[in-house]
Length: 315
Image (tube, rainbow, N blue to C red; front, side, top):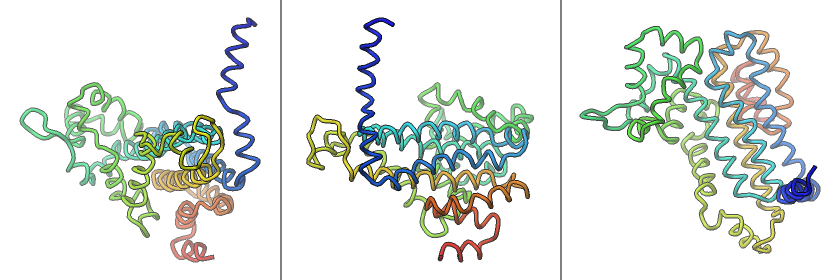
């Protein structure tokens, strides 16, 4: 091993700020951090217990591709926060939430029962040539040219990515792809956020939250690392743990995972059978102990009905 390699490796280790991870875990709200971390794993595990056949896997593959990305982005985000790089942590956390939303959206768009009820998306789009074109128009044109595509998408939803890939290769056509706000509104219209939307508007609870996370992505002055240190009265140029930031981050990560589990349960609900419901029933205790309130309510509704969910939420 060359001296230059050793020096480079040592330099990288130093920049990772591993000592800060130890400080974050030892000196601050360990239980809050642990619950946020374990919530990521619950989000990842749920499809493994609910998808019981290759047929179901392929039918939900558009969502599962994004689901896999969520797991790693969320973990990377947490590690950045534990290391003291809060702006990077929040940037990745916003990406994590966006992956959840877009994975659910593209999964739904692959299926006719959702496309036929995509009223919000029909109001979006952009003018191309002499007429306005929406994402629904784009997909309808593709299916009209080759009707077998509709059945193919029902069987393998990830096939939608081949159909929409040209949209991302042209600046004009890319405008057809809806932004996050109409995606949230459309998912709400499809009831993908139930039971969250039974008590609060998804636009308020989810999109406003997304916008708050975007402040870090767009580096508003007080959201930069130095800005955060200035507000916390810390050394401006020293990367150190800021307890208030770490606690706030852990709460926000926990919230993202609660939203994520609700979304995945709604996406996967139509493939559940008695075996997967029994598996889900065994998850209730862990979900409750992690404080994932909306996820707990959704699982309770699936396996035991609304009345049981309301009683348990009150306990």
